[in-house]
Length: 74
Image 1 (tube, rainbow, N blue to C red):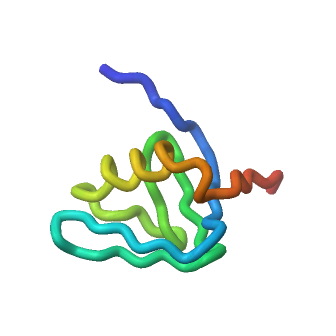
Image 2 (cartoon, helix red, strand yellow):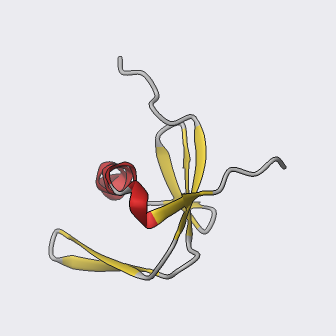
């Protein structure tokens, strides 16, 4: 069983981004928040489809220069 890498982090995009996954384009806007909880990616409060989880998680973690780490105390 693998260990969780990201327990709870909010990443906010610095600029508009378009990524290509399996021939489809996914567009994100500047300021868009992507939240990772227990290695599960959420966008706008909704869990992204299971088939895109690994791809988005790796894209976020491999491109830290695109994001502002925006962890807040709630």
